[in-house]
Image (tube, rainbow, N blue to C red; front, side, top):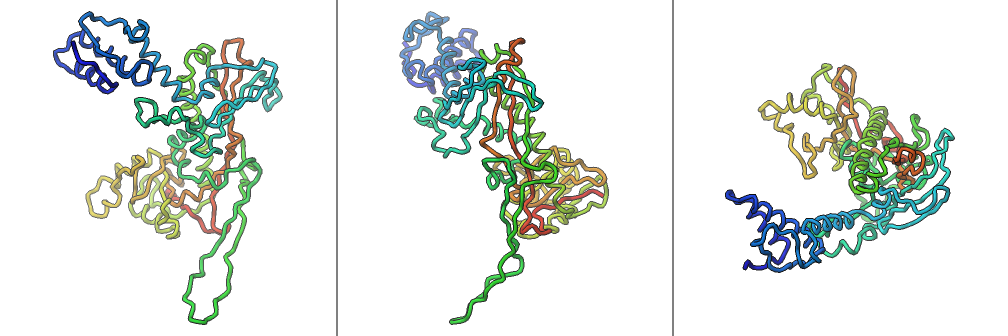
Length: 451
């Protein structure tokens, strides 16, 4: 009789050995699947981690007597669903399952998630044009307003092994969307999302100063300390000419069948998270690029309309104030096609000077140029006459005015019900500006313009 397999790791190891054997029969491969199913169940605690001896002399092994005679595949499915439930915020699963506790004509507010997710069920909601949309459920993500330790479920803090789910800590669902959005359009990741976060979308003043001529000096013994001059302080308002007050953004309504919501809430939440991230990356990325390009000077003009040279890139860097050019948060931004152009031209030569431009990756997986990260943004201009395809500078001087408490994910419970569908929409408030020192002509970023 074989020795008992005590841990999920041993179960998986045995499964691998069976499957990797070049002489493995179909029965051996079937046994391997059984072992993997048992490992999944043991890892999730659905069955004991030490199930006892596993015998294949009466294969196929259909049932495991230690768990009420249930099929090992049923155990594996149970384990999978258990891990999914623990990995997702319960409020998110409830929201995407389409459940509504209040009646269609009732309003009820519930705080049900320790991770900061609040669900409010409302009735009689109207669209901006006055059309009734019926009953609506709203999920607000307040996780960004909570300290990190308050967003950790004690049940998931029992270990750090990904096999036991300990490495999966639920965070806010909308926070996940924004994180994914910043990966799609990386210029959004370079901006400062903290300084101008507020509780309302009203115009917000940000203090700034200019102090470009004064230096510290040695004071002689018993000497007098020079007074002033003071730096010039000013206010930067986040009211932009394009948007006025912090604008409201909508993802548009995405409809899903009730059957999908009821049967596969985790999958639906993942699909919509990715869809919202891409839509917002396109919209906010374009808005950010427009706000930046309209408010920064041209630091270098390329000689031609279709080629970027090393001299153009170095000229762009040298046109920027050294304090910004050498800032730890200085970076480039360009589109993917522009990066490919640089890779196919500047980066192909083997001369000593070109070594400065050899592209490599940093720890975050971003491409580096002159040692500075490149934020890929496909909202940037292409390489063409008079376009501005490259920006360089301190992107932390790009301020994002947003209202985390007003980020809301809406589920339209009633208006599409005649087709057995529900709708989902993400609404946020976000605006962008470039912070110039003291409101002067000083600029933390510069653009390369094609000839």
